[in-house]
Length: 127
Image (cartoon, rainbow, N blue to C red):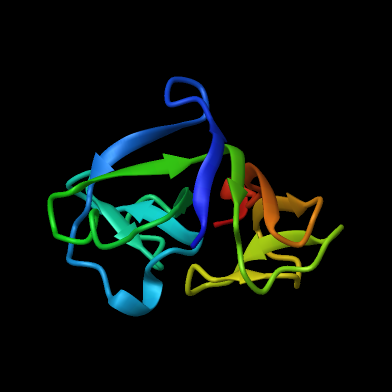
């Protein structure tokens, strides 16, 4: 079960309400998070704002309106399915991937620890 390990809520991210209830398939793992036009978190979708960071949802943070922590800088531990010494990005569906994309998430040290340094590297002038 993935969890935040090193996280500063002041400088490492932000909080916002979930726009919708969360699917159980998304529990306990890092997923991409954006914001809709009302400022609510859209998980696994860029929303109105593009992806802004990653979050972890679980049984305690699963309903629409629940407050989610969106990490932009910190560390997530107890991750499954990652490879040590690998760089990770988000795909268009908010899933972690190793293929380079405009959404840089961070890298692993050990296979179970994701160091998050989120960056949206899109050239907004070209959009």
